[in-house]
Image 1 (cartoon, one colour):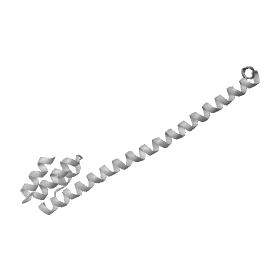
Image 2 (cartoon, rainbow, N blue to C red):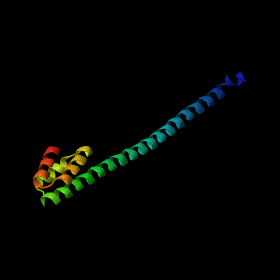
Image 3 (spheres, rainbow, N blue to C red):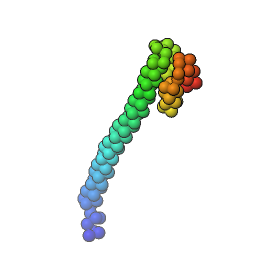
Image 4 (cartoon, rainbow, N blue to C red):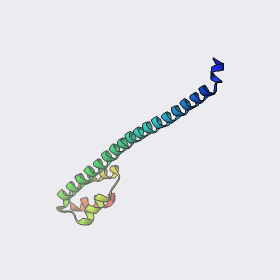
Length: 114
């Protein structure tokens, strides 16, 4: 069988098949890489969306409690809440605002959080 491998036509045929196999392998690898990248991108996007949604919900809750304590908060007070990007700080603010007995305590809680 070794003599068959030494034939020039067979060598050329094998070389072409190997090259075709490499090209197909690269193409399949690229496609798989793209698919994996898309899946990872979607998953990261979902996580970011959940995090943003949670932040927005916390901000909205803080603004609702602040409104209940102050009436209509000023633009600066609303901006302070909107500027908070740490969910833990927003959670603490929400608890403090909910516990505030009056407008002064609510403003103090907002000042501590921002």
